[in-house]
Length: 265
Image 1 (cartoon, rainbow, N blue to C red):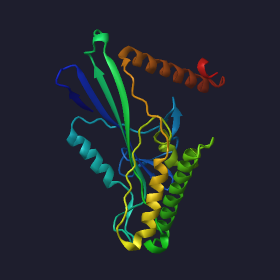
Image 2 (cartoon, helix red, strand yellow):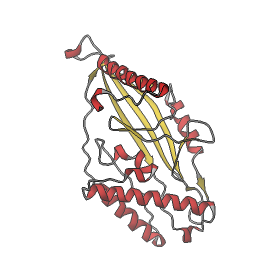
Image 3 (cartoon, one colour):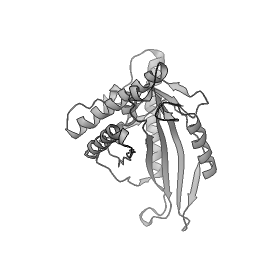
């Protein structure tokens, strides 16, 4: 956990790494859980409009050097391989999720109570589409390329559905689009960086990438500014959620049915 103290002594900002995943052959791998990247099966559930990966591990860090160490270890675990087009070709998509919490004890309207604002930053590195005939991929590498291309096609369908305003958005068709669900068409501010080649031989890939980015740029998100909340209000929300989960667990253990909170009954 990294803590920053503002000059006025009243504002504290806390950051923690809440998830570091690889999306490899349409599986979610937790890069925090050892060299072999534990596979997560119960993933991408929507809770209060946000995508949550169940079973994901969080890592506490106490300095920027520890952050860079975690990122370096995670990067070393990424699935890469050599092809005829790229000596270090990415065989997976990667997502790093960072939570930022700001505590303020100096607001005049809440001078006796601590207020909080919580934000989330997702950093996604997409593997590029691959022409198997040009890359020379075969067997396992060809299957990896096929999965990469399929997930990008699904992402393209999601982008097209959002741009065209369709009622059904196919988020569930791949793990990648489920991970990106709250970044596409939601309440977040999203930026995209397209990497292209200046080589004439790569003109088809360059045009395809630019067209992909042009379509994604047309998505209309509705970003919302994080509202300040009293610390006691945030704690009450956490406790209420804990009570709901405990009741649901008891109902499952005793096999007396499924517990439904009053607001979702």
